[in-house]
Length: 176
Image 1 (cartoon, rainbow, N blue to C red):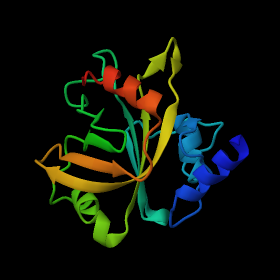
Image 2: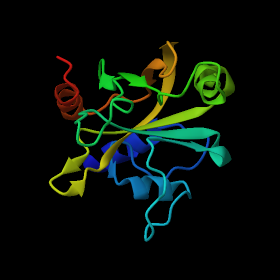
Image 3: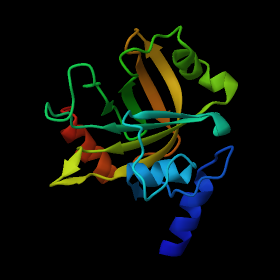
Image 4: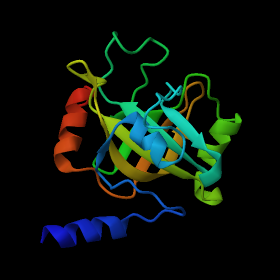
């Protein structure tokens, strides 16, 4: 039944802190930041970047778009973010992040430190004139990292992304 599916889905996510967001639900940037006490819904967030570190939670939020268009992304922000499978994603850090930097070290030591990374993705930046909502893909663990500025990383999602979203994400990111 639909009710047991929702219950099962909620039970599958295991986080070291409370999170009001539903796995695979769609949210605006403001809603995501507000869920972690980082924004007020009535006032726009000043955070324009796709990564927000949450000191209070020992976690970070990664918000990214699969389809990069010249209108919204410069050469330095056209990161190669794409799905490899329903549970694996290729993601690039911000262009100034090196493996030896504090941010790089948080990612690289994630598995031993218990640092939490939550992924949110959308197919494109806008739908018409409105910002596209982001799909909450849930927590992810770092499988591999290489390079510097940006660091290329492979993340393993704890829960597979919905099949339809996976297919659309592959298409949007130009991965066949």
